[in-house]
Structure formats: C-alpha cells, structure tokens
Image (tube, rainbow over all chains, first blue to last red; front, side):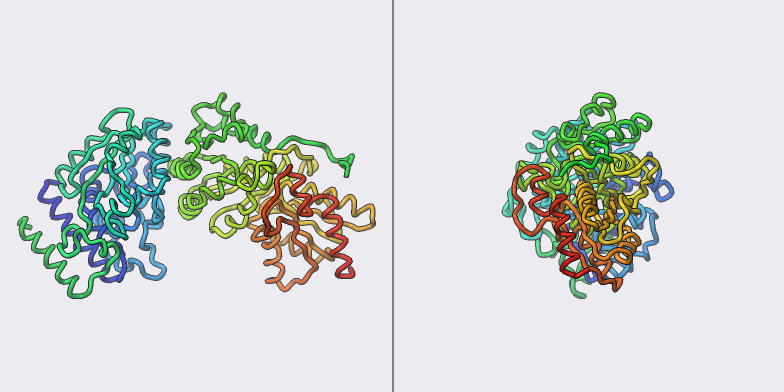
Length: 276
Length: 321
C-alpha cells in the first residue's frame, strides 16, 4: 500500500468510526481519531495477522492497552476482514460483542482491556512466551499517554528490559491530553524519552500522523538487539476534525447532528485534496 | 487438646505444593512458575535450580506478576503465578479480575501463606478477604485444600484446567485427613468424618480444628460430621443440602472473614433453597486482627478444638436440639 492509499485509508477509518460513535451515541472520539494512523500502518504494513490465521501460534500480536479507543480498532479489523463491517451497527448495543472496550469475543482481538495500565504486562508475557518457544512472532502494544501514570506500566517496562524482549514494541499515542486536560498539567510525564531510555528501552520519536514515517519506524523494530522498542508517536487528539482537535472535551464527546455533518464534510474534503 | 492417635502428621501444604509442581514441570516444559521475589517464600528454590528456564521472576511487582502470567498463558503456557495471598489478591486484584478471569486466561493463581499464616507479621500480611472478593468475580474456581493430599491433587488438577483457578494454603505442617484411595474432584467435597448431630463444613487449615472438635464432641455423646469443602467455588451444593437434611445444625469453619466466605456461601444456598437449620459461621469477625501465631489468632476467633466444641454445644442447646 503506497502513501496515498494509506492516507485514504486513514480518512475512511475516521469517517467510519465517527459513524459508529454517532449511531451508538457513545465512544471515545478524540483518542480514537488520534491513533487511527498508527493502527492503519500497523494493520496494513507491519503486523503479520489475517482472519484465517487469527489463532495461528506464529501470528504477530497487537494488544490495545488504551482500550477506550476500541472503535478505531473495530473499524480497522472490519476493513481487514475479521468480521463484517455491518456488525459495527451494534457497537455498544445491548448484548453486542462490540462493547465499548476490546474483548476476545471479537475476532482479531487478543486481550480484554479497558482498565488502564494492563496491556503492557500482558504483552510482556506474550513476548516472553515467544522467546521461550523460539517463535519469531512480534508483539506490539498501544498505550495512551495519560495511561502512563499507572505505576504498573513501569513495573512491566523493567521486566521487558530485564529479559531483553526485543520482540516487543510499545507505542505511546502522545496526544498530550487526557480527560481532565493537558497531561503536563494533570501529572507531568516529561521527559518521556529519557524515562523510557532509563528503564532500558530503545526509544524513537515519530510524527504519529505521518504514515510514511510511522511505516519506516514500525518496520525497523527492534531498534537495538536485546532491547524492547518504544515508539513515542506524537499525535493530535481529535485529529482530522478541526473543531475536535486538541480539545479534551472531545475525549468521549459525541457529535450532534450538525457537528457530525460538519466533521464528515471536512474529512471528505481531505479525501478530495489527495485526489481520492 | 492432644492430637488423636489415629491421625498421622504430614508436612506443610507449601512443601507439597512446591514438590508437586516441580514433578509436574519436569515432565512438561510448558509449565512455568512466575514469582514476585517469592521463590523463597514459595519453597521454589529447588524448582529454580532444577528448571531455571521454567521460572520467570518479575521482582516485587504483584500487578506485573499476574499480567505477565496472563500473557504467557495466552501463548499456551501452563502458568502458576505464586505470591503470598495477602498481596496476590489485593495488590493484583484488578489484574486477576480483568487479565485472568474476564479475559479467560487459564492462569493458576497460587496464594501462599494465606489466611493468618503470617500471623505475627500483622494485618498487612493477612489475607482474610480473598475468598470474598474472588467469589464475587466471575470465572474463577477457588480451591482451599486442607491437607497434603488435597494440596497435591489441587495443584495437579489445576494444570489441566482450561479456565482460571485460585489455590490457597498455608505453611504449617498438617495432619493427613484422608485414607488412601480418597478421590479428589474439583467441585466435590470430601467427607472426613460422618455424623448426624452437627455438621462442620470447613475449608483449608481450619478443617483439622473441626476434626479435633468432632472427637471431643464424640466423647460427650454428640455425633459430628466433618466435610472438607476444598472447592469453595463452585460450591458442592449437594453436600451442604445433604448435611442440612441429615444433621440438626451446621457450623461452617474458615480461616477467613465471616463476610463473604464459605459460611455466607452456604447460608445463601440454604436460605434460597428454603432450608432452615441452626447455623453458625466460625470465622474472623469484622474487627482488626491481632498478631500472634496462626493457631493463636484462629483460636481467638473460636477456630480451635475448644472453640468449635463450645460453639457446637451452644448452637445445639440454644436451639434445644
């Protein structure tokens, strides 16, 4: 998939996930829009996963620790054929498996997440098993930046470094915002690069909306043999819809009819700009 | 009260656990043990020396312990996560709830030195809440073995279970409760003594206290049944209902808070089945626990041969049975 095709995919995913949120009148809008390009590149360029090998022991693993952005993951998995797109009409509905955080009831999802600070430890375990079995699969996990205040993440970072898990890559969706406001105002995280490096990880920073740069970085893991890889993806919460961007109130805001129409028109205009 | 001559002394369940696990793991490379600086407390140093590639150490990080264990299990490993019960079921409760039970990863959660095994160390090291919190979490089998046989069988049964299981025991040497040929089945209680006046439905290291009490009661002409309810969840409902039908009163006995443990599980079953029977829960009251040895603390709560004997007589007398 070339750069232009990837950009089109990202816009399609944004339009579709906003449709899911609008229909369900629920979801985590800002953080889903911020991680779309990361998921796009992972599933279309990096991960060796497919619906017919969803239980193959050799498959790569993706664990979404920031489970609240599940609608972005659902949309990408539907596009990759893990389940029919029409299933997403039941998102957040009574008895639907497509609940507001990932569960293994949905094909393609590796782990139930939602409470923060859990995905990395699970990913460390999955990566350790790969090392023990000399199985060459890789493990990728996506964390929110606000989530890094959970101390469990730092326990897991130490374990990953201790065991030299270079088959593990963690990606931080560094959109600078959490539900209360700016991460640096709530409980300052910086300097994250220094902290991750001090915990024994090999660290890269990348523009989390530049699909070409993301592909380059995520395709070159491990950055250093014998070390787990950390990608700080600098993103914009609400990316793609100007009135949602960099506004913490869209963390789980649901657009009105007018706002939804405006958002879709803006995304469609972006599509026309790249000639799709 | 002296040990009954017919009862043969065994070893600590902790020793039996570590030896059983080592034997299992020697024949199955897929078996792993994960520890949080707890290999010494878990008597797992011989395991680490014999099978260094099958032990994962995560340091003093119990949340990480359970999360990593879930990830290992997701890749087909047979994982025993071992930590003192006090930390395993409090510090890592969210990991147990989400990463193990909700995610249906067949981790074997092993709570060592449970209850008040660490009696002298104070309340931080006591686990008197674990049965209550885990009973309220879906998809967790709860095993509380009472002697060496039950412990070995529980550890072996856990290896084959494809869903989460919690095993809880202590570190004090215990007498053997069962005759050769006894069969341990998850979800089926084991009869230790037959009797019809009163039934002790007990779990874990409290069972032997009920056995001693039953011997004392026998001297006074009171016939006491003792049931080892080694599986607290799912509860052996038939055994509880049968005891209520065949005995005149029931006392449940557990090294756990009276709130939410074995006793309340039995009470809930009986009331909802429309069975009314004189009933007493011997457990820990809603009070700050005192320090001391395991047996001293249990005895202060009435979980001793003398305490249970008196409770049985009081219950029968109060109800003029």
